Length: 246
Image 1 (cartoon, rainbow, N blue to C red):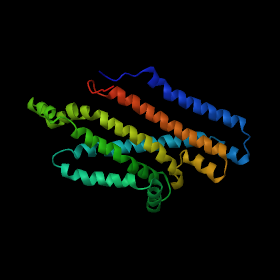
Image 2: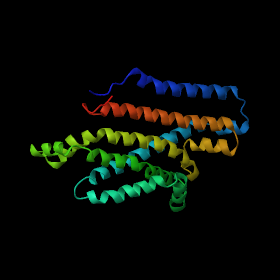
Image 3: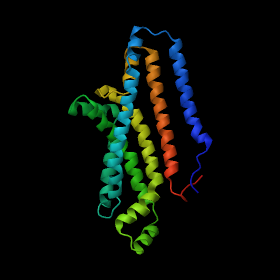
Image 4: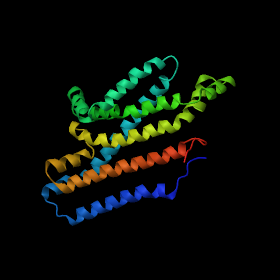
């Protein structure tokens, strides 16, 4: 049976996020802001940083999917199977490297700007999608693949109609993990001139203005929760029938 989307799953996370945002709005409305705090939050700065954060997450996730899923598929084919360990090791290095250190190296190499931030975010999030794609395809019962080939399916149809649908649960779990990683890593883009909600957090810390820091932190956590919640819904909706374990 396909997974059930219960009302608890639909409501719990949005309700928590709404409560957190409401509490933050109340805190800001009842706190006297000095000129430095007001300047940090005025002129559409909050809206701009939120838009930049969303763009960083969306663009980086797109490139993670474009790189990791086709690469994962290629590395499970017989001709490239032996090359899988080096590629996975390289992805491990990308994630094991401290994100801030990796971003600093990219800024030295590419200069300040969004490009360095995006490359760092992508490098940090490739591993879960790549490893889950490989694991999902390897976990398929070989008898199913042989049966598809036995009825005359060409390799491309076997991949798209048998293998990938069966690997969807693991692939989507990796994508969901990558999305949450991207939200967190995108806040570090501020140190490379990439913008995002990290600008608010950095400004709050540097200027010692708690309201600015609280707003930036709450918005980041709220985005991570919403992204994870949306990923959970997509994962449940796209999971093939018969693969759901309650």
